[in-house]
Image (cartoon, rainbow, N blue to C red; front, top):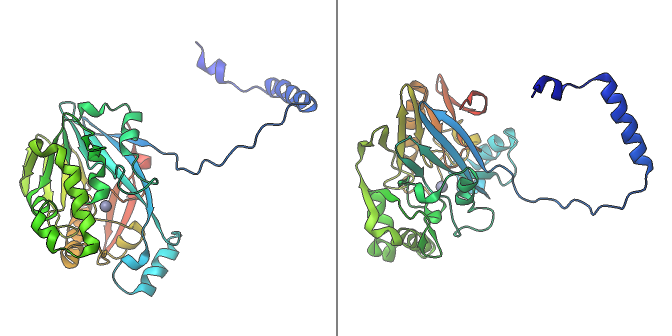
Length: 323
Ligand SMILES: [Zn+2]
């Protein structure tokens, strides 16, 4: 097939098409029903390579995250948000990331499943749209045990990833899966414990403890980033010269927290530690020119961190993609 010939637009062709369109407009045609508004975001998955590995970002959905949940001078936070054209309240994305090393297929976090309403919970469906067979996922690497990260583990009490081992930090497991800690927690926190336990339950025989650092498999290194939760963990994927740090919830609102890494979230278990972990992750990413992937970075949640003096900036990945 001669593609050039097929796709050529000629002046004569345009004139003929124009004439046909004009003729068609004169003919009476039955009225079409109005196109209904879609009321749903379109992107499902985004793919790029990482050395010899392949990364697939899957969108779980989006949610409002009120500015009042962030700590610090509220006037300052509101100004910073408005300057970045964020809606009020800001809408943030939830992402999950599959990494196929060619040997193993990993999934980092699972989205919310059925736990957090209809604007979320599409990560598994989007992975399937991306051509990923959920039964082929060898391991789910959890950054922490909050519902928007573990809810997708189960579907009506059954495992969504039949053949996967589940990796979770011991500190998060000790906290969120403990009946004693849950008993002592304030009433509004109790559902979070229950959701974590329900999500993990069908995998009890396949739970793998995570070391605080070091490789868990070739090209997969654990990076401890505690603060948002006690055992909050990042995963550094390395293939050849390319590296990507999947950093979980190091950033919840990119417009606020790249400009001011000290701004923390009410849900952070240890505010000070969370801010320190954020600065550490930013410095590591900027110094080593790492690709970063974040569960709440703007879709598709993959980009780079620039450090200039004491200031950090986020650069999305879109223009560097090549498969
Ligand atoms: Zn989260």
